[in-house]
Amino acid sequence: MKIKSAEFIKSATDPGGYPVTDLPEIAFVGRSNVGKSSLINNLVQRKKLAKTSSTPGKTQTINFYRVNDCMLLVDLPGYGFTKAPEKTNLQWRQFIDTYLRTRENLRGVIQLIDCRHEPTAMDRRVFVWLMETDLIGGICAVKSDKLSRSRLIQSLHTIRGDLMMPDTISLISHSAVSGKGRLELWKHLTSLAGFSGRDSGTKEQSSEETTDC
Image (cartoon, rainbow, N blue to C red; front, top):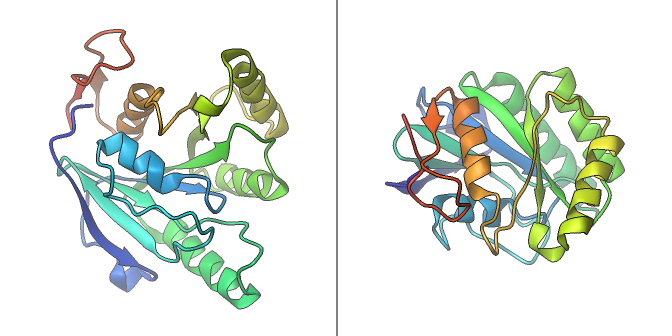
């Protein structure tokens, strides 16, 4: 997908703060510090659009980003940050749950999992919930540059097995460092959003892939 524009719109914690738009939205969820912001920055080819932090649990709001004036990418607060106060964790769960259950233009949720580790118990619970609510849009195995090709293949097999993923659910590996997997992920995201697309070639690094978005 060729990025013509990408901008931060706003942050929110309740429906009254959500952007007023009918554009399709794709949300990203994962453990604290799994790299959601880095993934979004790589997708839109902007180094500092989504703020990154080495401090787990820092993102405490739902952050909305508009891409090409045709769709929104949504960065949800991370889960599983054990050092956060229980009251804070409860508040996060409540406003994330409200967003996921009430946002009418949400087209799917991509769950991020660090490919260097087996899925955690929380990863499994979130996946089951997304499956039960029919919100799962796929799994993205991030930080793939940290593993050799053979270990990455083994990791993807482990993730699919541990989560008991149906074959119909996409599992895509991605590296925010090298950009590998970016075009495959964009093709999947635009499909979820309801746009048709075409590949301009087979090279992973091509920047000229276009869609109707």
